[in-house]
Image (cartoon, rainbow, N blue to C red; front, side, top):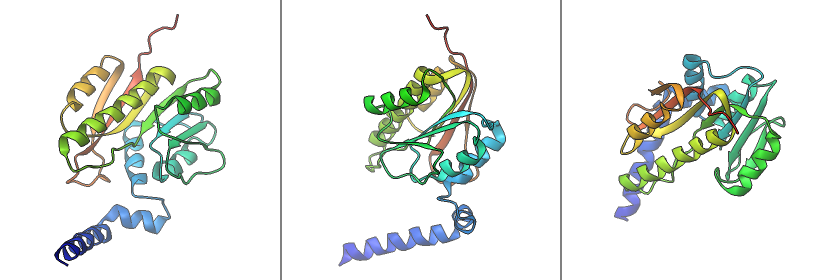
Length: 213
């Protein structure tokens, strides 16, 4: 019984936080899939990452909080959304059900691109939380590497990368390494991110893709 009571209190605290959260209420009122919508809105407003004819790869797209915004912004371009979980997306979005970085997913992306390249790689991927901070951070950095690998494969010269990351071991070194490949790299925390969260976003602009051949 004690365990059940503790879980109930924790659930009540979560519900109370959701009810107080401005961006949760905004998402509900505006019919958005999730509060994550506003994180991308704020990032795009600051960094001007999107244009109407852009080709965009979205990793960790479920449940579709970013996808909804992206569909409107790149209506004349291409949006490829990847996640093993269901994604709320329109008919024009290319949805790939699978884990980013897996060979079969890479092959499907290659087929869709047909020799072209992305203008922007986005990642909202996050690890399944174990509660062991060092383990969770290592998993988060692995996901950052998957997003970087996508850039190496498909991002055009001058293109951009934006990923969700978590403050902790390995992040500073990862950001420094990206500064060797992009003209500008910024770590930012949009207002829509909860203040108590370790969540940050790394925005890398102006990919200096090495010449092919």
